[in-house]
Image 1: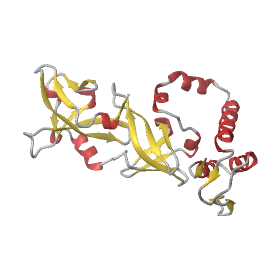
Image 2: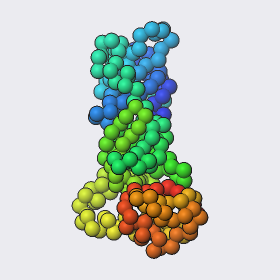
Image 3: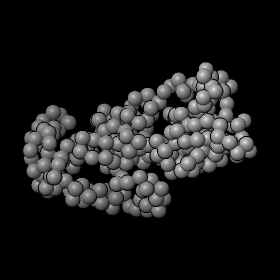
Length: 243
């Protein structure tokens, strides 16, 4: 797994020629598949045409270079209509606003994580006014040009660090665990995280009624009350507390 920014400017090495044939300029995202399908290539001799490498043509991605078999793995975009179409979509995952399917703003993406074997997007890192979080790809619904849409329950499935995106055992355990046990675990975790913290803005219910004024130090019953109001209210509260 690699961060998207770890690809940018990497030298591209042809194994057959034993030579550098360019640098990675950008990542081309396929929004329907949730994958990076192509890397665009920067080279001083190519002033007009835009060229790209299909991700499936990459032999390996290391710390210092992207390895390909030979220069025939690099194509002009005019030769790959789908690549040109994806480039024109200009899907920029980093910097996109993240909202859930109910219209609740969750944060903004600061990075995304890629399986360097097949180009699959494994998850995204996003920031809110109070913290940074990681969200797995199974919580993502839509990749837009400037917007990511996620499941309504996404805010209850944040990960503490990106390494957990690769922890299959945790995922298998969650799938095998009774749903009620999982829900109780999430509730108790939210209680522990929010009790004793102080709101940094007014928190409202879905109908517009004030729930907690700015400066409220949350008691355990306050957090339970927020949980009863639903995931959107709880997410809003979680992103606007300090202490």
